Image (cartoon, rainbow, N blue to C red; front, side):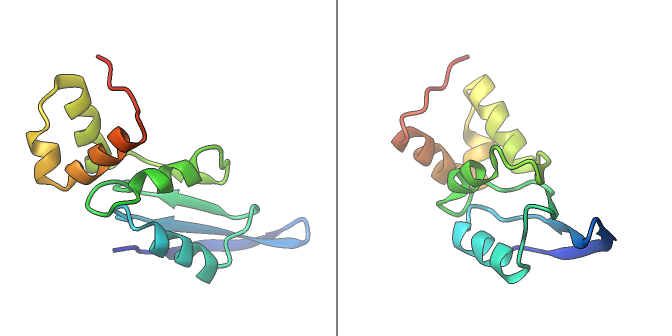
Length: 117
């Protein structure tokens, strides 16, 4: 589920700047991009994503790829990102997999990413 809320809009330098909040995207890249289109998200705007970008859906890493390098998108770590990091660090994947992490892990493996301790 994607939640988008306009936090506030103000006028600066001749243009409106919007602040948005989104959470629980869970790998649904298509809906993520559709939401950006619907709000007409611009470089002047700011988007805060309150975690849970990965897991459950198959395109969590595609969402992360989209976010990386965008100065106007701020991602906070959610519990799914924390479970992923814990699993990689400890080698215990049970909790992460129990919460939809296997699809993200499979995507990592398809992309040939390395997991090193």
